[in-house]
Image (cartoon, rainbow, N blue to C red; front, top):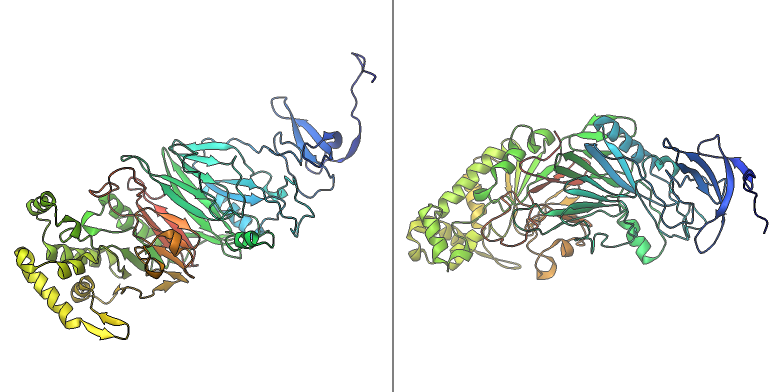
Length: 543
């Protein structure tokens, strides 16, 4: 083989069509792809501001309608194209994902850009890949590292710390058909919360040692349309495909995270604004605010202020309904205290053992904070402590509460009856709520009584699962309806089931050890879409 002389000028082997990206350069042959099916590579090279040679455009087909490179990305067929740009110093992000070789949802993309312009936010799109030989938009996706050209300025696939407690896992690609995309990622980001690009929406909190906030792991949803195989896995992926994103507000070491879930027309609501492809509007009042388990006796004052105080969720989001889980803590009659003399002594000294006072104070608090709105109380396991107290205890052994015990027991005796399904007795806590509430806008839901708003079931507390099993997000995610539940104090999202957190301090006497508890409510918007609203140190949003 003849070698070039030292002073011989180097010439391109071949010059082809104009570069479809910069329009000024021309494509040159430059080697082959590294994939199994080797193809001739065409490139357009340029230099960045530091004089470094970078790829302006790379393809194996000069007429390809997708731009697949950015700032030094390898050619199509290479396994790891790199998309990077500076993200430091930004206070607001909206993060979504995009499937390879798939068109974007144009109206949703426009709505996201409206959001970014209105909130001075940065749009970040995490590229993910999926091999779909039956795709309507490409003949073959084998090694097709291609993303819609409109996304070129927004693609990012690096690992990036957004602040000291939150990391973007842009370098991780998980198959869009994964049923649990967050599985096994609990420790990947260390002690930091993490965001993973995926078409399916999932969120969980990871237990951390006491004194630390739990880790939040979440996926994003996608800006691309549905594009799956006709297999079982593909059809499931298509069913759970979420046209959505993750909105993140950064405030020093804190961050506030919300789910953006778009309608078919591409519009979505985030807090009090509705974002459409061409404009931003004030959103209609929310259908409901579902509070994290209240436990009124031990509610955290900071959570109460963030919920009901000036600039709080109720004032800004103007929900029509307020939905309460475990409104009554039942500390005075807690069945777990009956064999512990030291807890009973502490309760007696602090005057925390008066059952009637706790019930009456619960109802007074409820009336004050519901006001003119509609209040809904979901039947929960702590509300049921009063029933267990009447059924299990002997009033002669608790003379301080004897009068209240006997009045409640008499009501239960008189309400007991036989029905077609067996015996039934009125709920004692709900009896006192209805007797003392003083207005007609409070509703107590019986066990198994349905209450839907926007096609979302709000009546399940979460302690009872299907067919007598213990309740959880895992077994309530596929009960035929979408739902918002409470009970575990650990918020999360599993398919159609969304779970709120708690309104109490994150450390109570019965949750020793690492904990995944988090102060967190859920909002049900006027369009029927939902979002979790975490409260961190008494703050819940950027402002």
